[in-house]
Amino acid sequence: MWSRAGLKQQAKDFLRNNYWKAFVVCLIVAIVTGGSGRSESRSEFNNGMYNVEREYIVDFSPGNDIFNISTNGIGPGNPFVFNTTFGIFAAFIVFSIIIGIIIGNALTVGEKRFFLRAFEGDVSIGNLFTTFRKGQWMPLAGKIFLLDIYILLWTLLLIIPGIIKYYQYRMVPYILSEDPDMPLRDAIDISTRMTDGQKGDIFVLDLSFLGWYLLGLLFFGIGSIFVRPYHEATVAKLFEHYISERSQEASIEY
Image 1 (cartoon, helix red, strand yellow):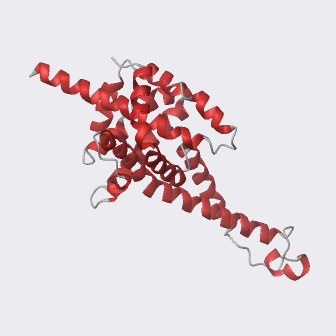
Image 2 (cartoon, one colour):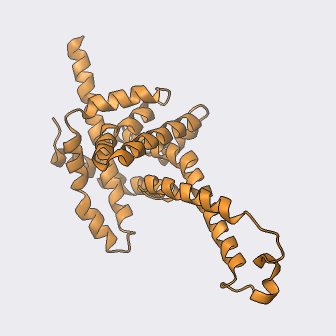
Image 3 (cartoon, one colour):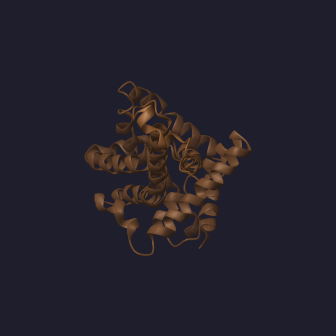
């Protein structure tokens, strides 16, 4: 059985000599994915699509503001200028979300792979990008996207079931980092068995980092990124524990 203190100590021992490499990996993933707000990003994506479609339907009638720029001016108060600016901003949001899905999801799995391989002695930042190999990139991006959709649908049903499913599926990215060809359904089943009866404990483990993140917010939110390597290393150690536990059970059964 694992303990929060034990996992955190193992993470600290690892980061004592490898913190800055872990920091660079987490920073890259945070920049591309926008931190941990993928669900919020999808909401912005939907709103952005609506606004892009709406704002680019141009009325070419003589009374339209596009034909009266000379009268209204080109300043911020001109409706046409405002709509065009808002449309460009919405398009930028859509583009950012698409990049986050296509590239960010693959990097998310690569981040898990970095930590798992680093525990084995291979502390190469290049492990973050190994998910972009031929045959892994798009399938992994698609699987993580579907996983987010599943969690989002459960969250829309009720908040509590969404949280439960999030922790039930928590180990899926780690499983896919080890076996990228595994079907998503199989990875979900394995994660479900791993977290069975322990979802509350994992929630408390995450909650134990709240103080660190709140402290990071005091530095305009930037400080939170310095906590992320510690958090990621701890959860990766939890997955490593599950793998070790499953291996012992398999050897006993054999």
